[in-house]
Image (cartoon, rainbow, N blue to C red):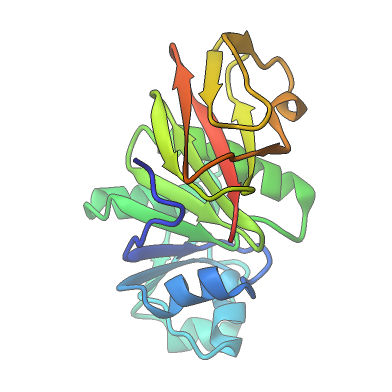
Length: 211
């Protein structure tokens, strides 16, 4: 069963909106390893949190901070991947295979959509979740049970329009149905403390709102 929030020790801070909700804040404060995506180091410093590593093109971090963190900097120049992907790859290379992403949403909408959509790709390499201001995104690539609570808001996004989806214990059941557009599986609701999603192939993103 997939818990509502998984207590992963490795945190990646992307350069979106800094998390203000108490749940991602708690995970950040209790992280064992914090990897920061380039310019997010500026915001992290303002909150008096020191990352273990700062990764990316390093063109957004302030010069003074760049000097202060010179032993923590990982300059990865690769125009084919964004800084978040560079950070995930760095974690996987170091066998930190259970990762929470914070700051993946907010600010520019195109960045938010790109970061969310990449979760499916990352799920091939590691266990990963994205904590936002409102809830948690989890990618799945097989039928799964989810910890929940009665009335929890749930949205399902298909990364492949050919995936046949069946749900159990959701208010608006889906039965052997393909979701051709991202909106079609949104705004559902859990009926009990657990719900199930069955798929025949492919990958889904599941969003659950915080309690």
